[in-house]
Image (cartoon, rainbow, N blue to C red):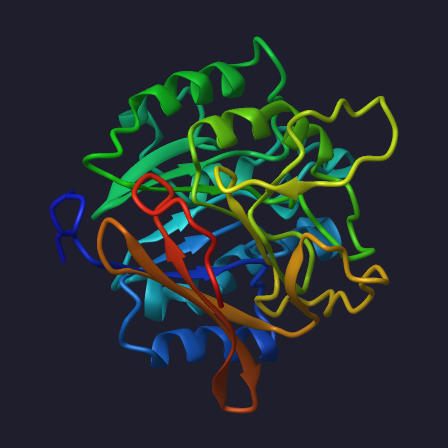
Length: 315
């Protein structure tokens, strides 16, 4: 099916899934997503087959993963991002080219956005501009990914695609003890650009739980200066961690205590999310917890476009 024409008021619904793998919980997540007729494309935030968790990075796990997601991926686009489990670096078996299986099996339209690598690229869908970044490729000043993103943000036409979404793997704001602060250096590098360009949402995975932040920023913080507390910023993105697809490594059930003020909702459960873009000003986001053979909406929020309605959102 051809995608709809790009335009500011074209409605579109994305599913959001991360860290899926191929377990009983993964099957629940995929079944629950496919049971909802609204989803038109999946935003996938990395960690696909987990082949690297098996002896010699068993490539048959990539084969079985492809068959596992085929009932959905054969009929609608999956917009892929790479996670740490896609690095697949295995010196013991002389496999020293990072991301080799992922890049050969999952082709993305990176050349269309003048990217030099399939690990970072952009795509326009309906009223949304989607930027995919690589948490595990160089991103500091003068690197290809850094230069590409700087140029790419200048190309975003908010009168054509008012919604701007970014996918990464390692979360920048994470109140779980698992993988705590692992996305910090990338945050310090890119967060000022995201605030300046009023990115709407940043989706991440990696942490095997769910979490949603308020609109906050820490753009005046230098990582070497000690402790700092994020502050409310209506120009900043909402940060959503959705590494709860159902992977073999289990749920990350160790949150920091007390819950930080910047955290709006968090839960150690498997599930998926839906983002329903209604028009240029409003979108509805829901997180669906896996519960037996059905998905239960456990978190939701109406999003208001920063450019047109610069006011605080409510759940």
